[in-house]
Image (cartoon, rainbow, N blue to C red; front, side, top):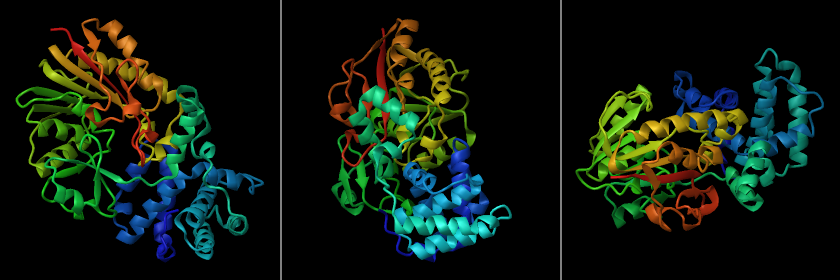
Length: 428
């Protein structure tokens, strides 16, 4: 349980913002990030903004158990906004450690502000007070994941793995950093442990721009799993590399730091601005281009191509628990088609004798394992280039028999993002 002992000091503005964030996260993909970027949210007092984010993330990480507890006490389904206020109240009381009187009282005050919610003041009060007398179980792994995803994970990886993965949903992750210039002093200053491959896992909390080394441009935030694919290209100074679907840019930074000549392509101009800002902060250079990865008209070919394809992103749930609840079963099949198209486009940009790494931060086999047979049949000039145990800093448990990687979140102590990674080589 996260201890926010002063969380009851945050007022109604923070809880109003949390209500908006939660609704956005549950109603559409990327909704949480979009709502958090609005002026209304960013203009909150820092304390209120921080509490609102923490409250919504805690709610999303425990949404399954929260809804199970509420379902046992709701006799008639209220409007969605009322259920969301109840969800936030339960998360305050049983995840964030907000005193019960504050969790109940502020929830009642919040619903009283809503025209459609005033009739539910008594309901909110009764349900939350009842739960404080009989606290719900917030730890059942089979409740932490959406049932359809838990069933998919159990079918693909076995029930023990699915339970281990689901257990991590509730855990607030540490921050992983990729480092341009490793040093023991930096590791100590960041209160970090060094993971295989060189990623630093920091125990620091709070605003990262204040952490040691940020202003000096010696590290950037990047999950340990996300750092693996670029390492597998084994870039040499002077080689050429293409990073497709490049934003937010962690892999671009990795490739540029090797001394390679890098081109980063992404369809979002706004996200490429962030890539450029990070390159400048790190003192690195790369060419950027705003275009769809499959339609980029440039005819150049490269020694190495990295495709981090659009995907359901279910593997990122530790930092982005909203992906679990915004994802829908139909998304997986639709995205698998996009990935196949982009893989074929990426293949055309690889020089003879060059290499291609394909990765997705998804736990769904259609987006990962199932892509390789089709890709190789459509592109016979390519062959798998198997990885070796631990290569690129990947957990050894993640290596599959065909030499691809299926990184599951529980493969690393403390958790890691879920990824699929395949490496191919083009005939010379």
